Figure (cartoon, rainbow, N blue to C red):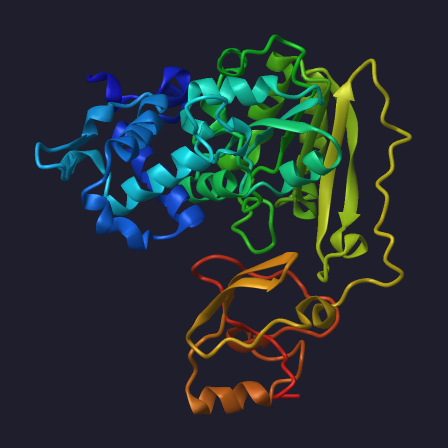
Length: 402
């Protein structure tokens, strides 16, 4: 197998990504950062500096930089099999000059660090903060909370490509492994980051909830219901002092099986003591009735029985109407992205394209009411919303329909 067909060092073996897959992921990430470059056509005759900049990134990713070259006439040559397009090349050049510089590259601000072994170790060395790793990380909500409280998140793991890509874009400088936590050995994590046992303070995780959720199949024997075992095994292997796991309250009872007791017992077997705390997200600034269990466990020499979560300082719970207030009104069938104000980016704000008949039907539905096919958001606290491609349309109350 050619050297460029595997990612650098252990990242490729852990993620099982070949060179084409890595390049495609990098293309997606840079497009999210810099857009689909309009300069792509003019980039067909780049200078030697631009080619050198792009090739520098490719080499740092541990791939074959010969996929980018220049002909005798000065035209840009891209190997058809390399997954490098003219737009991708243009974004590589931008990123090389902004972040992946020849000297003192800004690895901690680089969303491509997942694929760069030198970058991974550089980011791990840069901080004296307590270190956490995030397993079944999703888009990174747990990581965001831990960073806010002073932790450095040194690594994230999620087997889903889309979740991993979202995490990379939103958390530059944090490497993400696209891997099944059941197949990861703690020794490989330590070797990848350049750490010793005991240097990772916390293992945090929000494993899949479908097997426990009221909206899911709730099959007690489903394999994903037992991912907590792999999470605890990794924490024990790393000798982490803290083990945090979040999931839905439905795991208390799944067809007569008490998973909360199973989880507590298994965590104790791995050397972690603690109890689940039930949290209502509406007390923490979320306009939704959303209850979760958070297992807060430590090694036996620590004590957590005095631990309490501090509720939000808001005098009243945030409502749906307050959270959505001020959103610009998109045209039907179109989305709206960009800055709503200097401090707030707006993403995924889209309006469905309905017929006039359906619009009149929706107008007659009161907030919080309606059939499941046209459920309308309440103005107060929302219930759980179904996400994904099978989700029902949820309509928002607007000034014009009230």
